[in-house]
Image (cartoon, rainbow, N blue to C red; front, side, top):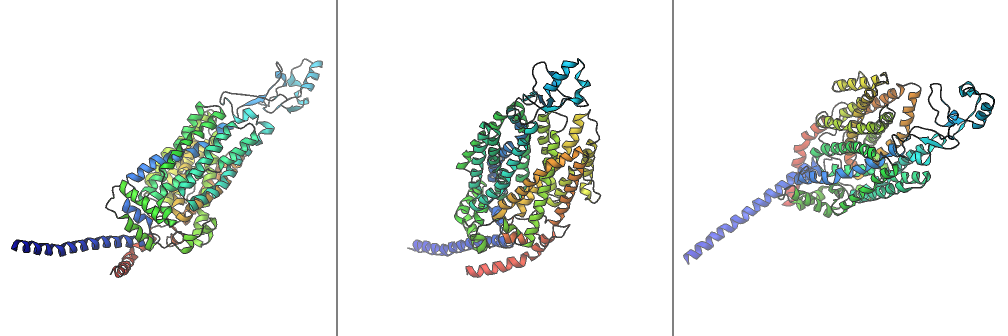
Length: 621
């Protein structure tokens, strides 16, 4: 009995102890959740910071790395292959009029003895002269009319076995069809950027990705079987609809799955993979020199990406912005499990987010559109500046690419090197992005490849600008006897502008808020796409003054670099979620500084955290 009583007494003593332990455990758990909630309130939005929650479940762990390499990198390939196969598809080889057998006397030549491609001598007049004289045709050719080719054209198949140009005879007075086909692609891209940007922000990243992929594979593959140039132009327009959204959506997914520590990695790796895809496209075109086969292999094989339907997740950041809390919780639980964060209570984290999220009723319920980017002054300023910088980079990038096609070297090798030269640029950009930030790096990369020699540029950019500036300018004075020397100088320019494109994608993705990120990037890219129509005309100015195109592109790059000073630095800052977040971000940053806002935020942190803890504890009690 005594033993029994003693045991009962001991158990009675243990029960309160157990309850006390449980209470302490719950208290610690609650304190941890309160601390996390306080941290959430101290983010860039000062009320709701998804990056803090993502850091709890792992913002750059095995899940993100596996997801990135299995899904996002391969998904960026189709845009490069489908959009940039055009130079090979519409390649125009040397050509001249097809003439009757043994009638070389009908072939006119210029004063430097080069064959004139689009005209021949009037055969009736030549025969009439030959009936009266046996003198060489050179003695009376100024009296003979030139007429268009009467029997079509003969093509030099050394470079291209066949192309759209040779099959449909798109030369001379039919050359405008090539320009129309190129324009139709960018018109499709112009429309598709708005269309798919809206779909991505309204219905989610996952759904929009498969709609875009379907458009690309179907229309791109059909393009390989068209029977006339008009059908090709129509299919090229439809193929342009999903570009560059097919590159942007995987990029956005990567940005939204990762925390601050992984954004630079994801952005530059996708850009690096895109550059590698460009070089790979050149190699593929080198071995497949028939335009129909090349078009087919640049589109149809990507149907394999439909297998992603079974395991491509939706962006949890988008789910939160759309108030889809249960789906967001499932995604966060999966991330925590794969990242080895099983001790994290995702349900409680989501509840805290849900309780403290400050999405306004307008943001949560209504559909967003491009006008939201211009409603408030700070966001409007950032939208205009980002778009302008994007346009300048696009024009210069394509201008230098068009100039490469005119280099006195092999087209295929020029294209391969033109893509490969971007790869080392990204490795150099990587550490700079993590140290000097986005603004100053865009100034460097915008100016680096475009022959800007402005004495007002920062000292960190001086050496690289001088090297690249000298390379670009000296290319204009190099003798044509050294073609690869001229080409190498041009590739230095591509090296600089390629890095600029990588930075502007990251920069724009970090400045636009989640609720309109795809719309914002789509709009900026769309305007840049319309600006691409200027690139061929700028390059054409070289007919009047060789250095003029470089001078114009240099001024464009300089103006874009100056504009970066008026944008806030995003290095180490959380992604804005709402329109209010985006409007408030950067208001306190100075013209040449980026730390003032973060410093003020840290100074106010204890007060906000204390207020939040007091309020939360009162609710608990």
